Every structure is written in structure tokens, then in C-alpha cells.
Amino acid sequence: MTEVELLDAARAWLGQDPDDETRAELSTLIDSAEAQDAAALAELHDRFDTRLAFGTAGLRGEIAAGPNRMNRVLVSQAAAGLAAFLLERATDGEQPSIVIGYDGRKNSAVFATDTAEIMAGAGVRAILLPRLLPTPLVAFAVRHLDVSAGVMVTASHNPPNDNGYKVYLGGADEGSQIVAPVDAEIAAQILRVASEAHVLELPRSDGYEIAAESVVEAYVAQTASLASRPTAQPKVVYTAMHGVGWQTFRSVLQAAGFDEPTVVRQQIEPDSAFPTVTFPNPEEPGALDLAFQTAREVDADLVIANDPDADRLAIAIRDSSRPAGFRALTGNEVGALLGWRAADILDASARDEQAASGTLACSIVSSPALRAVATDYGLEFAETLTGFKWVSRAPGLVFGFEEALGYLVNPSTVRDKDGISAAAALLDLAAGLAARGLTLDDQLDAFSMRFGQFASGQVSVRVTDLSQITRVMARLRAEPPAEIGGIRVSSIDDLLGDGGALPPSDVLRIHLDDGSRVMVRPSGTEPKLKVYLDTQSSDGSLEERRSAASAALSRLEEGVRALIAD
Image (cartoon, rainbow, N blue to C red; front, side):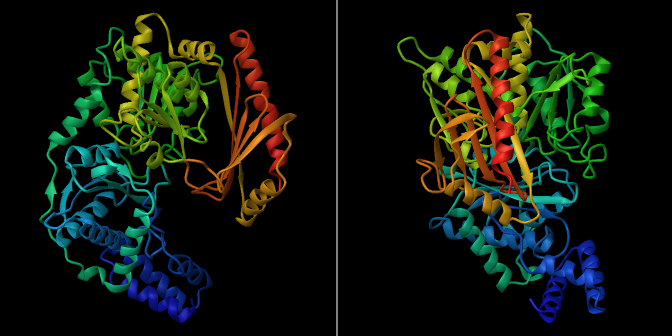
């Protein structure tokens, strides 16, 4: 884009921006660029040479002016494009409908209201959730209200100045996130709106509905039903990580009969600045420090943390060997425990003459531990591509998870990861164990003895040039390794060429003679090459199993670092 074209595009954007803040900062940028300020020109190029792409994850980016940022112009275009898609998809005489939710991030309520007004103006029945609520409430409401689609305005655990726009489909999609080719069809409508329409001239209406609190109450009741009435009460510390999880989680706990946890006061209320954490992601180092401090002060048994939109769950247990006195469980550990719980409940509910049936599912980069549970219980097992848009669609699903702290424990209610229902299920498990004098740590040991000890690790390489990732993936395909860390490679699956039942994906799955597995893939959200390592051992005592799996993991990590060096 030439400088003249760039400035023309920026002025045109400025002329349709209804937001005072982004209009002011863009006007300043334009003035500086017109004065030949190199930094301002570079910033405008970054904002206007391309636009945020609408994909299966919707939209996500930094809040600022321009098509390559999140703002009211871009969101309005997205809403109008989605409305056009829903109207085109509707059968004769049918009025399409949509439910819209939002979290506590900057501009979330504004973006949600814009969406509701534009949907209503286009002739789509629009229902706005009554207040800021967790993301799983939208996935739930799509089915509960039997609407055509759902939108959630959130950027989950991204940095404070980011926001995003997730889309769900109703009907046969049962409230799951969109997948191809629907994303491309919606994207085409958004681009059409962007090229043909002026945002300030889009039809708007205040004739949208506000959902009744009964929607939230129905979610709370169904989520609370996941837990049995507790006969023991683990002492819990809870943090919402400055997000929107607390009110809903508190209601679930009350309905299920659990004592109210001690909350991390500094993080319990929604705060879009996320002032106590560098990144509002419970996986990030230091994010749980305040929760650990609170847990030590009250001598808690358990720490429960949701990310800001409460679709993810982190768990920490007592561990005197750690400086903090607590150890955060990995997503794979929690997924294994919840998967075992789901299989056990299913098995107990099966009739004597009929074996339990159903599917346990996880993403391809998650631990193989869930497969071992499925095999032991005679259940189906499904591996999917990363993302709950895939996990949620596994046929016969009874439980699904992803190693990045995502769990789907109640597919009859929510077809997406849900940190609140997962917390309820985990707390139910912990309470049942406590009634028998046991802990989650004891349950992990029991898991290892019954199904095998599984150890997982990850090697990530951040690059400044994306061609580095391309070169490494090409080299691994052209010159496949015969061994990694001294462990012989038995086979390699290239999911780009033949993923079997999986859609093509730029992933290499490497199987090793000792049962270990290495997954290599480019990150879908960051300039990183990510390698997932999984080892297992089923021989000997608990300590022998742990030692063997840990030693194999160390060898793999050393071997992988050498393997992917560019």
C-alpha cells in the first residue's frame, strides 16, 4: 500500500469510527504520518496493510483503531457479516436468532451491545445476556434458548488491552464453536460488508431482548447436578484471576451444598487491567502466587483458579516439597483424574446386562493417559485436532479435555470447555476422596498404579522469522529421525498428508519403541514451534514407574532440542 493509499484508508476508517477513544488516537496517528513521522507511518501500515482474519476462533487482537485491531468498526462489520450469514442460512419463513454474551474486559459490553443492535437492525432476533458472565454461559444459552448462533465477546486470558469475538452455532452443531467451511462463509460476508457498507449507516435497532436471569439459574442448576451432596468439605481457596467466574461459581457451590471457599480478595472482582498479574493466565509463572499465599494463610487443601472468562480451570494441591507449599497440577493430570471420574460414573450407571458406552476424547497433543482409561473401561477413545471446536464434536462424547487447562465435563449442557463445571466435578471428586481420608495426590498415585505412570513435557522455540519453523518442519519430513534421545523411532504419522479421520494439519506425530510419543507442530497463535513430549511406564512400583517415565522424558527433551535446532 502506497503512502497516499494508506492515508486515504486511514481517513476513511476515521470517518466511520463511532468510538471517541480510537478515533482520537487514529487522528493523532494520521497527523503525525502526514508530517512524515516514520514511526507513525509504520504503525499505520501495521494497522491497515491487512485486517484481523476471521477464522474458527473468531477474532482476537489488541484494542485500537484500524482493520488489524479490535474496535467498534471491525466488530460492527463482523456483526453485520454474521447477520447476513444467518439470514442467508435460514429457511423460508424462519427468523434466525442469536444470543450474545460478554466478559469484564475493556469494551466487552460495548462490542456486545453493538452486536445486539446490528443483529436486531438486520432482522435477526438478538438476545443479550443480562450482565457480564463466563464464556460457558453462551455455549449453554445457545442450546437452552434454542437459537441459531451465539457470540461471546472475550479474549480469555490474553493481555489486558486485547479483546475478541467467538462464534457458536446452534441446531445440529449443538452450541459448538464454528469449524470450516462455516468460518470462511462468515468471513466472506464480513469482507463484503467492509467493502460495501459504511459502519455508521448500518441498520441498528434497540429492539433486542435482555435474557432473563432464569438462563443463568438453569446453567447453575445443571452444573451443580454434576456433584453429589458432599459428606466432607475440602478447604478451598478460589481466585477468579480478575475475571467473571466468581458469582456463577459461588452460586454453583451453594446449589451443590459445598462450603463457600476463601477467595483471593485482590483478584476476585472483574478488573480489565488485571493489576496483580503479568498475564491473566493461571498457567503463567507467578499467576497463582497470591492464591498460594492465601492458601497458606488459611491452611487450605486445594486451590481452584479460573481464567478471566472462566472457561479454563487450574488446580493446585498441597505439596510440602515446593517453596510455595502447593503444586499446580498440569492440565494432563487434571484431565486424567476427571476422565477417570467420568468413566467410573458411566460404568456405575450402566445396567448389569449392558456394558457402559461412550467416548473419552482429547486433543492430539494431550496426554495418552485418557486412552488408557478408555481401554480399561471398554469405552471409545477419540483424538482430535487442538481446540474444543473439535473435541466437542467427538461422537458419543462423555468427557473431553485439552492439556491447556480445558475440560468438557458435561456435554449434554455445554459443548465447549467450561472451567466452572470442571471445578464442580473436580471438587466433587476431592470431597468424595476426603470422605475416605484420601486426597487428589493419593488419587494420582492410584491412577499410576492402575493405568500406568504418564509424564508430559513441552519444548517451545520462539522465532523472529516464521521461515525458521517452515524449514524445521520441512527438514523433519525430508529427513525423519531414526531415534530421539537414544530411543528408537518406530513410526511417524504426518497429519498434513494422512491424518486418517483427522482433517489435514501441519503436525508430525512420532512414536518411539518404548511407548513414548513426540508431537511437533507450529503454534496457531504465536511465532513458536511447539513440541509435546509424552512418556509412560507400567512396570514396577509407583516410584519405579515415576522414575522410568521421568528419565525417558529427560532423554526426549534433550534429544528434541537437538532435533529442532535450526
